[in-house]
Image (tube, rainbow, N blue to C red; front, side):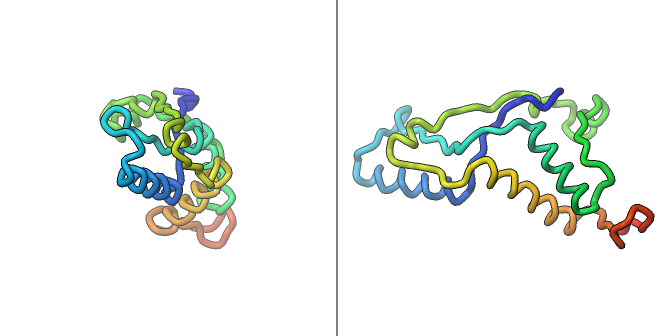
Length: 143
């Protein structure tokens, strides 16, 4: 797997705005329902490699890792962590044309998405991961 697979992103606040707009318009009866009632909340797309590289950079910049280098899972790791399923190796794509046609406009874009990944890496690593003490490579790791 090269990480070149493509996935959509959307901020939860933008998605909430879409839900509110769909609800309001559905109450008025001026939008479709059934198969004409699917409204996707997609602000943009990213590759899993770009997300992994952002995670690696955040780990290295915050001294949670010595390297920012992203790497592919080995077959053994895929078996261990994903029960052998390679679902993450596929694409998940869509377009938000119908959502935009009723006036929805996401406010947060790719830069916001990547900044959020970085902040989540720090939050999750501090809460659940190994914490780097002392800020140098000879310092001890502690749980």
